[in-house]
Length: 426
Image 1 (cartoon, rainbow, N blue to C red):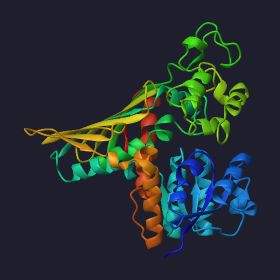
Image 2: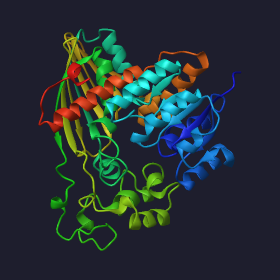
Image 3: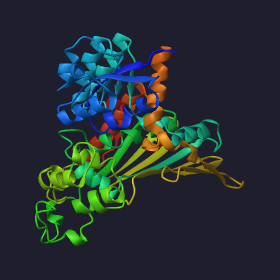
Image 4: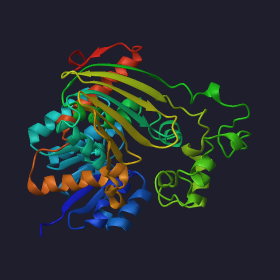
């Protein structure tokens, strides 16, 4: 048996520790976490307790970790968006392979710098575009490549963010301000840009986008709204975004409904209890009124795209949905496909034939995160490192393309929907 691949983790938050590191629990022969860094002592304590990382291999910052001699085969970087590239560049110089949480960076020059460094060092850099690793999108891409609907003509994709998820992450949470992290279309939807580029099978030529932050603004606060939900707010009974309702009682992530994972682990800073959640909501960012936060990212956005092979695509991101899911429809010269990730089903309709239902329910259990994409990504990444391979579904080269698309879309939105030619934008 080969030795497990060793990982050091920069950023022990919900992605680094709760989404990717958990692969080790079921596959200790493939993955072993040996070091980590985080500015929060509580997260380092979880790293020690859950994965047996010794205290002298737990560091208070990515810089402190990277000041050490090389400690592992792979550096998993899951810090905040604007910290990714500086840490990745240093890690490549140290000789690490890199598994990098998306987005690479909101700065296109930084994306290129990391691409150049990866080529210079010859190390593997894989970006966590987990959707490509899901059975749902893998099956969809295979149907298109097999010509099941003839020549692909159009793609219409929708990201249903979920009203409560948007409030958590993009109004109250870490990704609420584009200047501190990334624009919404990059941070949340570079996954979708990557998938659209992959399905289209050719480079994007032109892009146009519209969108705004329209709802989560101070002028939309109902009369009687307090600064914080637990500070005597007079609107709580009828407010969809009441923090106690979302985190304690709500159907999607209420602790009293048995939901003790994300996002409650983020709010509580670890395994949640009612006491921890109430303390966090009284003093922390997640207890603020959604109409009185310092957020500036959009709550809706549409993107129109045309590709070099003639494929046309549209994408919609909206905060105002009940559930967090993605849906998609593809049309071709001989048929069409509709899919919904929540149902984990594809509907294939070849013109003149009976509809074919393709169920992907076997992708559940341990492969639940992002429709199986989180575990699928780690599985394929470990195999890549074990075999010394260089070709990855989401290598740095492919990922930069999605970033160009997302950043060009944001440029178009800021210019009132002006069409952006990507060759010029690059």
